[in-house]
Image (cartoon, rainbow, N blue to C red; front, top):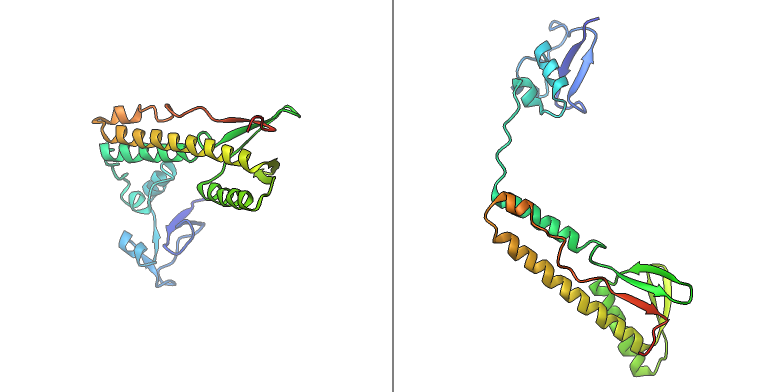
Amino acid sequence: MAKYTYIKRDIKGYYIEFDEMFDPNLYNNLGDSYEDFLNNLWVLLSDEQVAFHEEYPDATVKEVWDMQLTPVPPRTLDQAKAEMIQKINEYDSSDNVNAFNVHDTEHDVTFEGWFTPDERSNYKSSIDAAKLLGVSALTFFIGDVELEVTPAQAEYMLAQIQLYADQCYIVTKQHKIDVNGLDTIAAVDAYPYQQGYPNKITFEYPFQGV
């Protein structure tokens, strides 16, 4: 049985099949052009247009109507650089960089965590308050893991994390400078943006000698 494919702008997906063709004597909202589709009329596709849509399901309605794919503009050097900068930013903010390890020597378990700049600032305020008030122990949460540390140990830990974060920032900044200085798309695409970062810090807990 023949199928008739219509397009209409307010239909989800734009395309719908019917077993029978609409009778123009019964419907006053039929069209025969792409402009009619834009005006939300029912527009019947030809067999060739339906075949084009089946061959290129991701094509736009305009491309199906014209039965011609819109040429993709050539990728520019600036676009390649923007894509690589995005990769650098995503890698820099991922746990490939933003992470440290804590090795629980008593249970021989290692787990990973990270303190954001806001968390580091908040913990720094807690350390200052504890030192001022003579509090001997603080609680750090590494994810869901609770650690009890002295203010001195906490201060040392934050200092190490801050130094590591500063070093990572420098690497990320240099990567962006290097990418912006490249002059070919091939060189940009081949840029080793994951290299150069310092090794993640591993803290041995309970802390010793701090």
